[in-house]
Length: 484
Image (cartoon, rainbow, N blue to C red; front, side, top):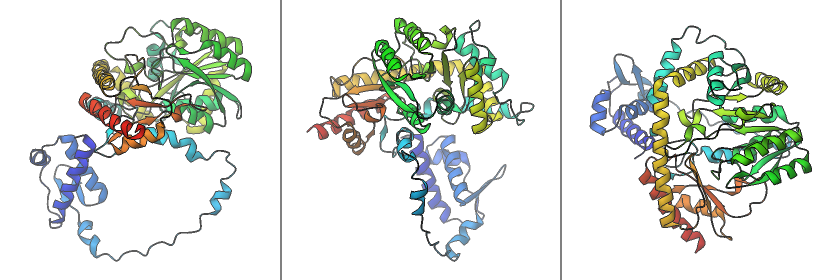
């Protein structure tokens, strides 16, 4: 059973129990609840927090948890008259100036963040399962950060100097070409992408993107009023012959790519093409936005990773994006944009207008986290867990759905599945959900019409390798339903 369902079940049980209590009666201790319901301290704490938020109980530090007085009075209180809904139809006219409704732009992002019901295996999310994240390490880092002198002072708009220095070393190496002055702290990877797109390209202009690519990139590009132009990729990354043609045909000034464990294909840009991407972009007078989202998700059986493109860039072509959220927590919305020259000044100006700065306590906590020796141990443990889930997924796919899995690399969190022509991948994803597993259809990953039906399978969000294998089995059931 996953943590979410355990919390919900315990909260429901306590809710029924509290109804029988007189006002002010104390609930059993956390230890007693743990023993009675066979759950963890975290589950008890979160279930109690649910009841506190509902106003059913009150928590008194050092004393315990008690039935709230408001709970007893609520049933006899006169019901408030239902508010009459106003006429909201005028908003359709007011919002009609937007060429593409924002709910359509955001739909792929909402799909990525969707939390499935407790009985559905999650093979959709890009975030590792909660059991794989360093919750205690994060809690300790946050506590230490709160005690730092000046932790609640306003930070520099570019970010804390120490944190920018850490990112510079982590991206370019200790003796690399990147310094703290080349780094801008952003609100996670998605926030960094938004700043980059709004800074580097004028509204209405074309932006080259890999095809297929992360659907969130397409959403950001379109929301910024830009036009994504697809450049096909293969097992070695973007096809540089077609990249050169695309620059010449469109006169684009930005190319967005994921050279390492590309989402959704898992491709790694080959050594020969790395140099070509930089050469072609420089000749076109264009920027390469390098989304290095998966570098901390390398599996323990992976060979040595290639350096980021920005570490090999001498001319300020590459704008590099790095985020810690996937390896740490979805709530640690801290990332970094790296750039040089006037491009950095443009990025800084865009971010300060949009959001001023990333909150200092969050930056301080991040600095505490990455400075802790346990952070490196966590990354190694995460790499081993992701390796085991990938191994389970690959074995299950070969057994249950032979032929749908192409090449894959030991890193990232997803596999790209190719189904026979004629299969509707959207219908297949819907059938999979009915069968008890959540996966992502391939259509939203293509800037134009997709050449074939695909699904993206994410093995990071499942709570165990066994759950991954069971999810693939359920996917087979769905495929048999759709394919007849």
